[in-house]
Image (tube, rainbow, N blue to C red):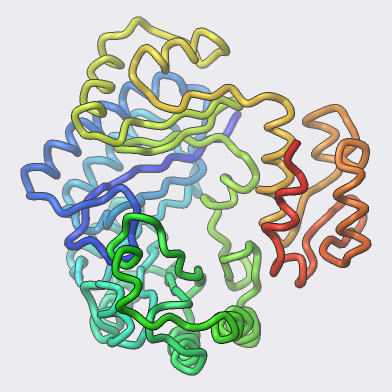
Length: 394
């Protein structure tokens, strides 16, 4: 049976963080309920295309999904169960922010089948949190983490950020020490990117950011300290204890099929990519058109016409060359790298013939290494990954 993963976008938050360029904003209870009702309708309509597929992972992202009542989360998951066949060991992740969950919510999550929690901490320094507009402090995070453990969550990710305004390698090291001392199963560690249009981007002259040398120290500390604490880097920005990798995110990097629901959500199924409308009025109209459209199968040009007519955006049928490109630059994000045999099975050609020049170049430069059929980034290659990835584009 074919596999598929599902992403559910909840575009609401209590307050927009200063660095955030995600599709999210505060909303009233009535606005959130209105949105969820259309989300349920979209899930029902989209599920008609995937009747022969088994769901291996579900990810509630945002925004802040935990800002919804647990009753709304239960409604969404129940609709998914009504419309899809779920694997017995399906991984179901919900993102949350400290201060937006209660003990009751967490017990409700467990009861409805959510088995992985991703908590947005970013830093354990309260001053650093305030500078980036987070709604919580470290104490609020500790309370949320403790409540999650008490409720029964045995698979928890913690999000961290480096390069924050006013942050130093020493303060970042304190964050790493405190977080590893809590023994989560997974840690995602990202560097701050000043996205155009965000509050922090517009007001960056008012802040003092770490210089390049300090930023590199933080980058090195992440790998060294997390490795010492028993985490291994399985993807450029993600670390896990053995056996606790995020299965949902690995679907993206391995180019598995996934369907996205909600505002701005992206999908990629059978090498067709598309994106949901980002404006709510357009999204509502798209769902209504889906309900009014004639039945359509998930096949080639007919499905592409359906997507365009219904109002989905950025509809793209990936060429063979684009599929190869994605296989390489997404697969190389994983520390396990890419497999020559899998490339041959998918595309009928040898990886080393298609990409002879960049492979030879980066093997010689020490940015790639090979073991058997696998090709992967070296430690230095990870540091210069963007340089490597661009060479695999036609």
